[in-house]
Length: 276
Image (cartoon, rainbow, N blue to C red; front, side, top):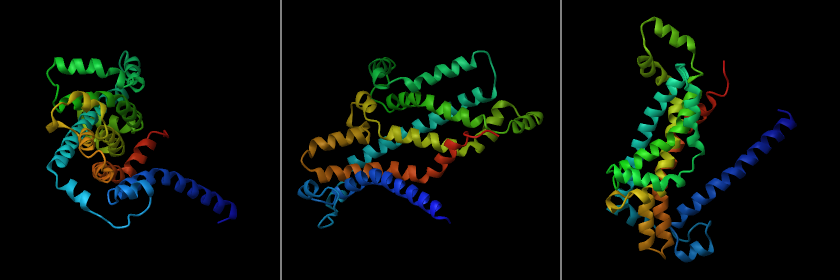
């Protein structure tokens, strides 16, 4: 290895470490804050606690309300992911494999959702959900999240599907395999990277969504964890250590899910970058 290559690699590693520190430092401070006293949080937010106190983590983990909030968020996020993957993949498959009049215009129309601010639609969305009788139910959050996630999902799916070998479909068609069967038997099994990529994006967005559940959900039994944290924060307004412990426990599922699927995310995002 030449000195020039060594310096280039050293610079690359240094830059990556600096960027990683900006991401890891807030998470680490949040997790450590659950073990500290309020005085320690104010004086040494990023330092280690003088004594490791598991009282707040144990209290939250033993609270049935915490697990109810977590279960509601998990149910909503998983159903939103499933619906987005099914509808988005099916729509993108049509755009990628079937040529019909107006397909480009329709595809461009669907992509307009990427430029549509979610907050501007919250009032008419609330009225529509109320009129069809879904207010204060899980579906009042799941269906809008699915709708707003379809634009990005269709874009990523279509780009990936277009890179699949055309000869594979032609050979399957000769053997009597139609579009629908080819979609289920060949396209989806070959699209694991992009399925994981879209699934992680939708899951994290749904898991952290605050505005939509705030507007659509009224009963505490249906609250997701961001609403539960707001309720929790109101009860323990001065206990930052308890609040930080609550936040740490609730963001762990999203972090674990992201880390488990990170290799598929990279493969999915780069799968359609090179054609041939």
